[in-house]
Amino acid sequence: MQEPEYTETTSKETKIPDINTQAGSITKLQPPVQSQEEWLKYGQQISGFLGTLPNYLGNLFNQYKQPIVSVGLVITAIVTVKVLLAVLDSLNDIPLVAPTFELIGIGYSAWFVYRYLLKASTRQELTSEITTLKSQVVGKDS
Image (cartoon, rainbow, N blue to C red; front, side):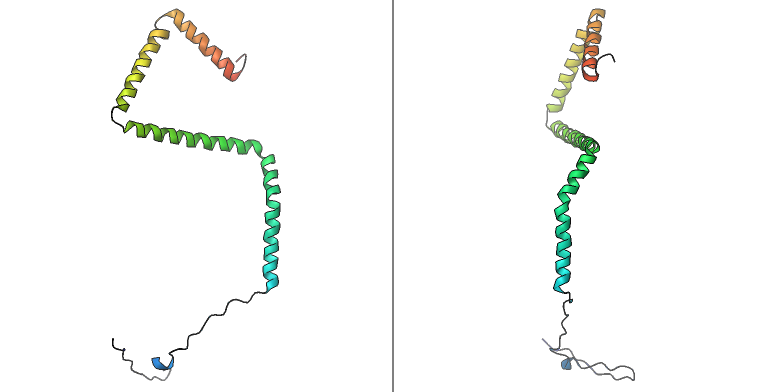
C-alpha cells in the first residue's frame, strides 16, 4: 500500500499544513457541563408528574366516562367487523366452502319464503313476532 503524495502549495492567504504534522492530534469534544442540581430538579419534576398521573387519569375518566365508553364501543365494533370480514374472506378462498355457503343461503331463503311469506296467516304470525321482538329491544309502546 503506497502512501499518497502531498505537495505543499503556498499562497498569500492560506497555507495547507503537511499531513504528517497533524498525526496524533485528535481533538475530543467535551461533554456539556450541567450541574447535579439541574438533574435533580428535572428528576423531581418528572417524579411529581408521574405521581399525580394516576389521579389525573382517574378524574378524567370519571368526568368523561360516557364518551370514553361510547368511543371504545365504536372502535370495538369496527375492529370486530374488520376481523369478521377477514375471516369470511379467508373462508371464501377455501375450495368448495363458498359454493356450500351459497347453497345453504339459497336453501334457507326458500324455506323462509315457504314458511312465512306464502300464506296470509303465516305473514300475520311473522309481523306479530317482529312486533314482539321490537318491543323487547326498544321498549314498550313503540
